[in-house]
Length: 250
Image (cartoon, rainbow, N blue to C red; front, side):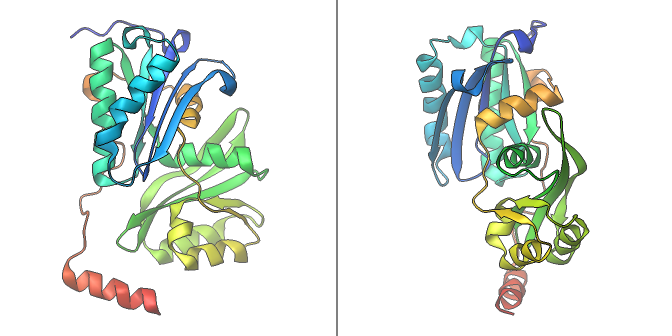
């Protein structure tokens, strides 16, 4: 299939986030204010495949926007849940093929940092996302005009020792957020010890992805769509699980 050289900046863009326990879908125009965006979000646990396409249809209908008229599809590239990442990517890829448009995978850590910058006034931030198995993904960012820029991007999976070292390298008063801090009390305590501003419950919003995608401008053909972070090992064996539980009790 030949993909038309559509300028995504001149058309409505569809964003899909499905890498965590929520589904989030947004439709917006380049440069339009957030108030003009059509958004649907809901907690779904692990039932993304059962509701995601219906949410996309609801958003497109609410905006009176046929799929054939969109300019591109943005999806959450990760890191995130092993299966959920692939569901989001597959849906984005299928929709992009049907519409004859390009796709963009947006790093979830970058999206979280962009959202965090809108909540906290700090110039520097650290986002840690839970990777399970006693590990996290992490990246640090600095505030720039119109958003954030990565200082150390896409690091991980990191051990608790490595993640703590990243926290200790952040300037006093930096902002911190992400499921890594929600899941691991020791990391949250380390952030507070730095005098940091810790935001609990930080999650990915599709409307934030629209702005990050516009800034990063990483559009590719639908056939090239793929999650950005895919770890080789996704589960612990019995002995590793036992050792992790012992470490958590210490």
